[in-house]
Image 1 (cartoon, rainbow, N blue to C red):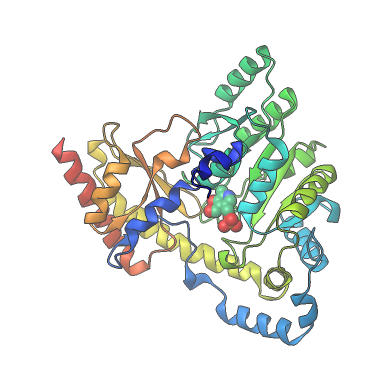
Image 2: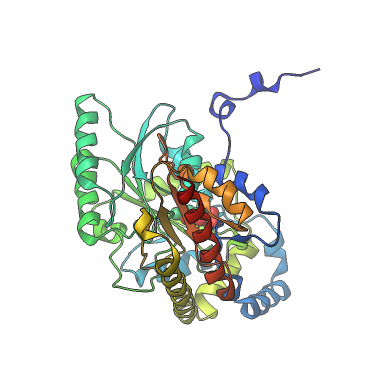
Amino acid sequence: MITNWQTRYSDNIREFGGYSIGKIFKYLTNPEIISLAGGLPSPEMFQKHEMRLASQKRLLGDIETIMQYTAIPGEKSLIEAVIGFLARDNIKVTHENILITSSGQHGLDLAGRLFINPGDVIMLDRPTFAGAIVAFQMQRPRICGIDIQEDGPDITSYRKMLVKYRHKGIKPKFIYVVPDFQNPSGITTSLQKRMGLLDLSYEFDIPILEDSPYRDLRYHGETVPSIFALDQERDGTNVIGLYTFSKLFCPGIRVGFNIGPAEVIGRMTNIKEANVLNTPKYNQDMCTEFLVSMGFEDHIRQCCSYYREKLSVFLDAMSDQLPHDLGVTWTKPEGGLFLWVTVPEHIDTNDLFMEAIKYKVAFVPGDVFYGENPARNHMRINFSYVSKEQLAEAVSRLSRCIKDRLQEG
Ligand SMILES: Cc1ncc(COP(=O)(O)O)c(C=O)c1O
């Protein structure tokens, strides 16, 4: 009888602990807790009626192809709709540059598997999306994190590290960034820094992975060109774009897409052949309907106006209630779903999380958003999911919790 399974696992998985955010959800079973923890879009923004109609149309139509295996790179109709979706953002791609994925997380997994050998260096911001960290960690890279600044990645520090690596004969496999309304910080990368990242990419010959789930959810300010589009303007082929329908349409459908040079997309397709095969046709068809017949431009405008209002209520309540004078600060995002709160360094937000549960409010402790050497005095706050009525109450509970903790010393 096998009793010690640990010795049987692969080297990649033996120490792998999975997605750390998931572990806090067991504390959120009490329905009285207002959770600002998940990264969920508001169900109020789901196009439920349109989805039912589209679903009925597809299921009454050619149900056999829906029930069958389908093309691994993705449905032609969805790929064409994606080409149009990207064209409005000045990105010019053809079929061979697109792979439909089974969600953004799948897109990240494909990128990690494609590029990383155990021990390879990858570079990313501190903090950055925990799901990307965990996807990449499966391949056991060495993660080099660079502290993010108010207007995006710290280009000077990236450069310094890249020079150091070059002296040691090390070439990082890629730089991973979320330039628009980053998860978790809400920070948007300025045009200058996007150009700066591209310059680094050309100078040091390193690809950029640009993850863009929130790009269309802008509530204030001007859209900044994507790094992918900037690279194309400069005739480059250094950027791989990762997208998902989860935040604009709905996460339950689990569809996204990766874009990049045909050669890279071909290899990602080979990996997809070996893991999920095809993304379910029904799910892809729903995304095609979303892009072509559910009035998605109007939908995006509605989402923006709905989330803009929530963000504004949230930020007002925070500036009224959070103890700024006691060293608590927070970002003021122009879009997306998150903001990032910093408390004085002596407070560990994992401890604060356990306190917050008693005040019936929850957030994600910030340490999970670091690939190495985590900072412990931050928290990620989601403002999209909680109802408008509960937003102010959530901030009030959080504020009481933080004040009480700070007054304890
Ligand atoms: C930056 C970023 N990338 C990728 C994803 C994954 O998206 P999906 O839910 O489609 O797997 C998320 C989800 O929160 C995200 O914030």
